[in-house]
Length: 260
Image (cartoon, rainbow, N blue to C red; front, side):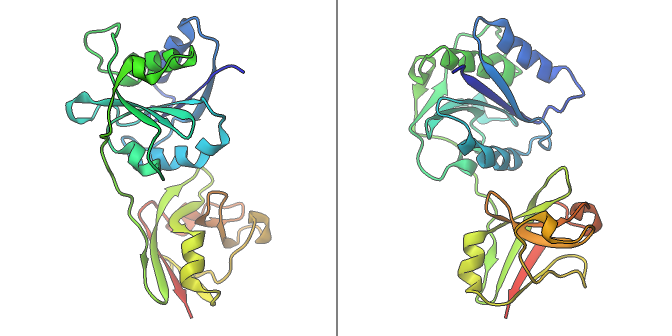
């Protein structure tokens, strides 16, 4: 099977930056699949990039190489990492990204140290991560292109606040369909709720939701609904509508679940 290289960036499609990354990947004598995960991450939003990769990473086969081009130019001392994690590889700036996706210690971390084609690597995604990815795609190891380390920057996602009869969370992601995804996970919902009746409330009063659906089509067209998505997060949606706009559910908006 051809090696797989994925790209997750905040570059969008307007400029030529993304094309230069792909051109450099394709210009080398390495036959690999290039998979675009997303290039519409909000600018410099490391937490959003981590959320996106975490939700798809388990679907990729072992050996997949993930290039993360979000916040790559804003690191202390320009430190960049190659990480082996769950049989896959992540190439990222040492900006806290990895700490936001990890649920256990990585198999290996190296501080990337490579001989580059440029003396001024002001575009690390192209100038550093691409050569590293190509090295791995050829069957190379991380130890050859970096120095082992146990250190990496830490970040912490905002966690829901829980009480005996409530959960207070927030919208952490709004997808292209306007579905508002919160940081309230199914297991926490069950643990606090204990099977009790509940009410999900948000910015617009009178639009509370008191049931969980299993699919969007469970609600009539234009009707609001709540469900736990494939990643296990509580999601507020409107069937064939944009919940983010119609219900005012932008990123950072508060969601409160009250239990009887």
